[in-house]
Length: 546
Image (tube, rainbow, N blue to C red; front, side, top):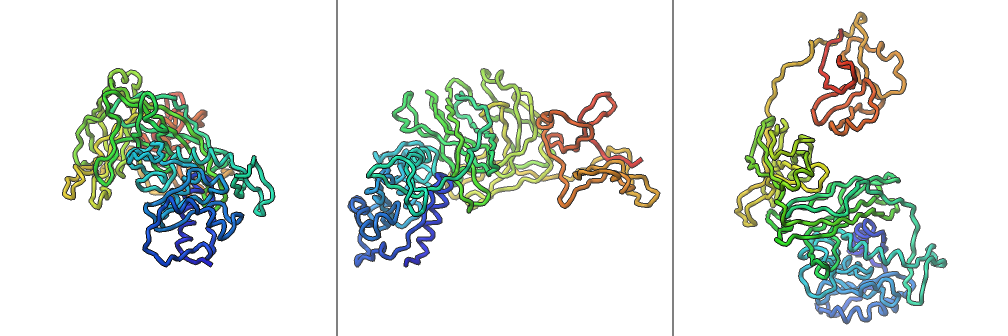
């Protein structure tokens, strides 16, 4: 019996990749008959010769009925080779070989399931659909990190899998689906899972300027309450054959819990690698924008479901790029006000009359809103938050992590302050990056009428304001005396809801006494009559119990 830990690693690697992205689970067959110890271990074998007989050899060793898909691991003349779509034909289901590299094994099995190459270079006529720039990043590419399937590959595999007949029982007696004498029939399980739904009303086509960042901010829901992951991949199959002619321009990334998928100039290991479209003739690209669901417990049986929108992005060469024109300093103090300026083509300004401004403290991974509904005049006096922004490590050196982001409302375009880590890829290159922020001590004058310590004696007045999450508030005001305000919760922390001004305004029917923390104004807001005769939201300050 095979006990080599390598095979356990192979099984775990394949299941992490294939279960998450396409819904296929593997069980490696531990059978010593499958181990062929050559008397010439240093020999390099011809991959084409190996796969010409690999299925029949494995059939002879363990029997065709005892496995569903196979691959020969050997020292071959290159990383791997496989028969495209061989997994669905019984006499080709093991026509694959690879060196003992996890990614290479997964890559060749992907070919067996019907997935083509995805890279653009090298353009060696090796059956690539060319949906990823240069060597690519997905498992069906030749690049790195190769730890996910791109959406075009998922489409190619699922298109074949959903038409495949399967046994409904492990004894393999009952078949569902149309079969032929050539069908390779695996065991399958029907799992109940409702696909997530994208809630955005995305346009089918967006026209943007050249050299301009853009993003898909995806809103989605899932009926089953599953965790949601987001992705957007260029989907132009064989783009050089399309008219107008296209090319793979945008890097594909693994699905992420971050619902905002950005496309901008890419800096890898600190230097420039991929640029936004800048051709004088413009550019056009189709994207599959998607949400996928996952169980919180990865051991729960689950078939990932997707909701996908097809969106075309066109870069118009006559539009001036949308960009921030301010030159920021490498460091600021918290609470400092800085002039922020930006540039937008006049033909677009009327369409986008408001912008939002956000700040990142982790070099662009996440952003916090600073100002919303700002008039799109091209300039704004921005007050920086009074908190710390330090550095992040890029290529083993520390780079200032602060970035400002401007985004026109109801658009997909955005602009960033500098986010290039270094001037070049040289070891002694100058650090660029964003900016740092040092908080300053704040001295403020209280706005409340007075400040008094709580009186807890029996003669003290009842606490007049009590906020409770309990269902029964009877007599609760009289049970605590001498306080300014009391928060009551049962067996869990009491957390005041945090909303932006825009989110607060979406409350359909606010009631007197509602309390929120306004993240736009950075204050505690109460809904009540503040003397104007009408109900309204207003920031409240501490007052006395009298």
